[in-house]
Each structure stands twice: as structure tokens, then as C-alpha cells.
Length: 69
Image 1 (cartoon, rainbow, N blue to C red):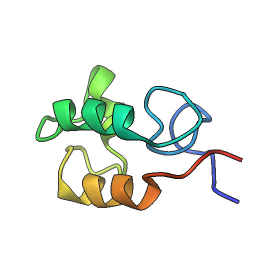
Image 2 (cartoon, rainbow, N blue to C red):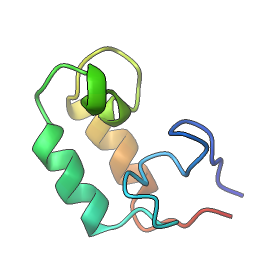
Image 3 (tube, rainbow, N blue to C red):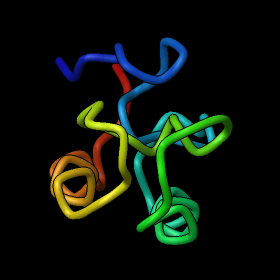
């Protein structure tokens, strides 16, 4: 079972709330990449270090293609 904790009770990295981590989420993530994690962009800081960077990308990539259960 995949944890749904992390982003408002949704699957971690499912930014659009579709129930799966897919290309729509990737494009949202790519737009936020390299920015500070504050306000609306905080949800893209998947490792919680205050920046949206490669560490977050690796967390995202690990979740890509998975669905919430």
C-alpha cells in the first residue's frame, strides 16, 4: 500500500489530486523546480528542506506512475 500522507491527505506527489502521479503532476512540478518552497509552491517541497530541487525530483520520480490506495 502506498502512503497517502504528505500533501493534504493525498498521495505524495499527486499535486492535481487525480489519484495517480502522472505527467500532469510532472508539468506542475517542473514549473516550480528551482524555486523556494513557500506559499503555494510549498507542496512541491517533497523532502521538506525548504527548496524545490533534485532531492524533491527523486522523491517525485519514485512515486511516478503510482496510484493512491
